[in-house]
Length: 278
Ligand SMILES: [Fe+2]
Ligand SMILES: [Fe+2]
Image 1: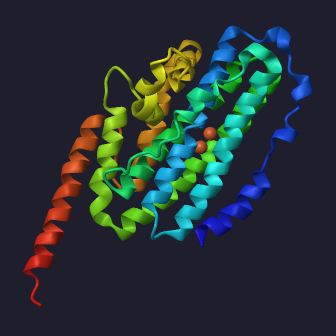
Image 2: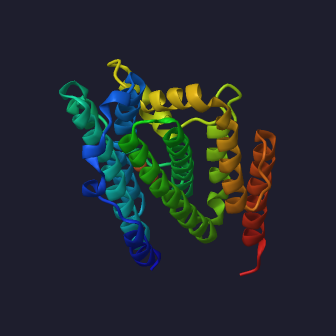
Image 3: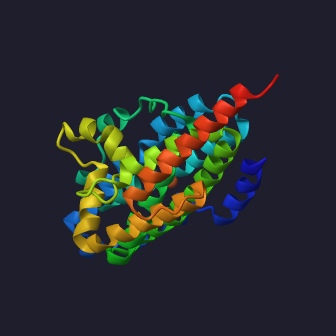
């Protein structure tokens, strides 16, 4: 069982909040942007409960993936609490509003297919991995830098694992391949936003209503300090989906062509199955 192997692998990389040197926080270098960044990360990470609920709903016939999703959910909650702990060490005024966190509880709705749900999470993990690792280079406060770096390494492993489960799903259910390409197209084809983040697409408007931080604030800060790197992220995502689907995907037009080809292949295999003699 793959999740069993992963569990052992994850233990080698495991870190806990007690490993973080909280007493080394350098308050003198903390900028208002860092506080906004940490609050925004809390709002992005806390959505993992809604996502875990969605994953379990969609994997009632797949113990292995459900077990992995549970391990993943634990790590995402750890990220939420790591950023939250950092904020609590900065000052009493930088705490997190529980009402906003609790508002994210509702489970994510099922995707068009299970493979599309997994594909959405690949994009989410690659995006957060990239943004955290780049921000870790720009943030001067050493403890926030460490949290960003550790979380980024976890997100990279998450992207790898969701890719594994998406590939396995497509092998078992080839008819779901077009939905994976459709998902990619939704997140990378908008010329004004080279990459959209799934949490922002699903819950951004709801969280924006009260004027507090959302995951978009991390993105905005990332764009300010390292904006040119968004194209690099898009290339990383396209490469991952090329490996996953077997299509060469570098531009949105190629995704559209791959989508048409994948749909045609499914139609012809259905037609030949229907015409085959009993
Ligand atoms: Fe995370
Ligand atoms: Fe993650």
